[in-house]
Image (tube, rainbow, N blue to C red; front, side, top):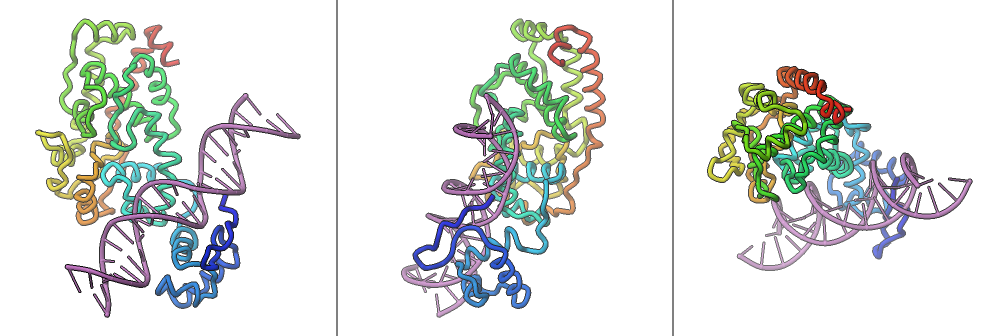
Length: 321
DNA sequence: AAGCAATGCAACCGCGTCACT
DNA sequence: GAGTGACGCGGTTGCATTGCT
């Protein structure tokens, strides 16, 4: 899975995949002398490579503390949460994942997590639900399937919340292609009031849903009720005027409620990234990041009840099946 | 079994930043 | 302040592998 030899560059230095012999030379040298100047290292170590190539090989592959193998669910959550705040700051994200390199995280994001979020209807850039394809009834079966079949607990929570979010968009239509702010999320996580006009009534009627059941479930899914402090960061940093993230108001005392929120609620726009990175690096202690599933107990209970009840209706059961 | 497409990931490239003179 | 070199980061490339028809 590596590049084949491309040959030597104009300076006579080798490019392409590393051989075991080259790896051993690099390891031996760094273990004895440290890397020192990367530029001088290849000559001193007897390698016909540029210093940049040596640094990359060491930091991304040969370093003894590199953790290999699949990313755990917990690591997945951390990446999604941090990406929602930091954006594509892979090195900053990597500092919170011991043993993982920025390159590895970047590849994992591009090959797995991005697709996963897209499948759930979440924009992987802004981390807010996509509203440019609001064919809700057509999307519903996929969301339900996702909510029930996702391989991990975390996946299931995301899918369930996403499904409810769609219901809320059903009832609180937002403009198509909204700006990349937390607006959509705030609509959902704020104090939802269901619009009971004829159109929405008809749509819900097709699913044999009644408002009280939906309202109960939506209220139940509101993180401010699931866990008292879970909205702390969002209340602090989302300004009421713009609904945009204001990291300057983030006091750093926030524990990531990673499993009970959409993995977003933050704008990774360039204007906010610098502040976010600064705040993350200066105020968030990685030890304080908690990843508890327990906060969702209430939500899950409501969800099960909801699904059980609704499965009695033939149309709804068809969708579920 | 063969051909093709999609996927995963190591490695490269270009650019920005920082330190030093 | 300008110039230069080294380093690090994020985006991209290209090939091996896997999956599908």
